[in-house]
Image (cartoon, rainbow, N blue to C red):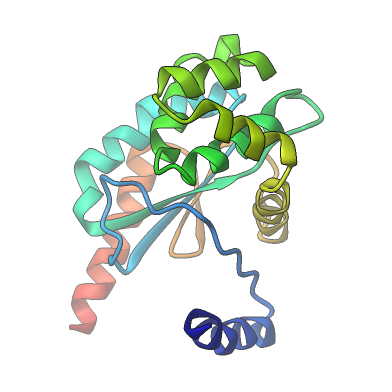
Length: 195
C-alpha cells in the first residue's frame, strides 16, 4: 500500500507532462549502477540479429567502460511482423526476471538465438537452473504481455522504429560504441558541472 501511495504522485506528474511510465519487474543491468543519474535505455528484440551483435560489440564494452557511472536498462521492442518468437522470448525473459535471472536469460537468448522457438524457451529455463515449470506457467498465462507491449508502445512514442535503438538520458544516440560512449561522457560532464 505504501508503494502505491508513493508511486501515485509520480505517475500523476508523468501523465501531466505527457511522459510514458512503464514499471518493470526487473532491475537495471547488474554491471551498472542502479543509483546513477545517467540512464542508458536499449530498445531491443531478442530475435533480432543486429541486437545480438550489438549486445557483444556495444553493450558489453559500454558496461565494462562505464558500468559504474550509468544505469543500464533494457526495453522490449519485439518486431513481431518479422520475428515470430520475439514476443514469446520477451515474455519468457520477464518470467525469468521474476526468478532473478532476467539478464542471464537475455545473454543466453542472444548466444542461442538461432535456436529460438517456443520449445527452446523452456529448454533455456532448465539450462539456466530456473524453475522451468514456474516459468512455463508464467509465460503461457501471458501475464507479462502487457508489460512487454507497454515498453514497445513507449518506444514507438519516442520514435523507435527498429532495433537496437539507444537513448542516453532520454536523447536518442546512434548505435555504436563510440557514439554511445561519447554521449555518456557528455552527460557525465554536464553532471559534474552542476556539482
